[in-house]
Image 1 (tube, rainbow, N blue to C red):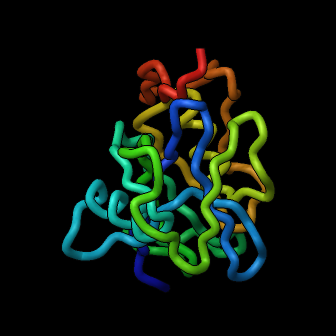
Image 2: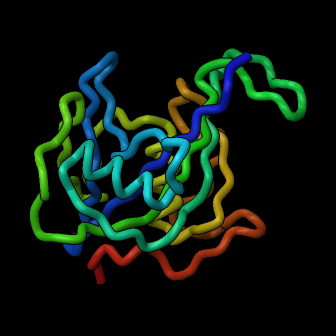
Length: 181
């Protein structure tokens, strides 16, 4: 049994309708949302701003919280109530954000190769949490509670990209302003 890891990330979209993704250089090359781990002395909102700047060099302004995404090991048995599962057992706070300036404020960290991508031409492969969070954020959902499995090719629970079928209790406040009209 392991401790739960708390992480933060954001779907950062610019006025041109592109999203900021990081290509991870360690292990299998995959694209993911920028972010990092939550430190014990900071809030998720403070942590995501800090982590994105440290990882990509970009200063961001938060718009809102998309939801909470739990990443688990697909081969692990379901843990008993009140217990964490084996690694990876990560709870990710996913926010919507936009750049706070026209250029990065600092250099990107080693291990992250940040690039802007049009939502119609996303690179692959994406991490399962990135795929689910992008779908939810771009469909305007908030209040999402979702589980993804670390090795799944698709989210554990999928909803249509057209916004129809939003899960009960999840709001669709009008979507992320990506500048597309």
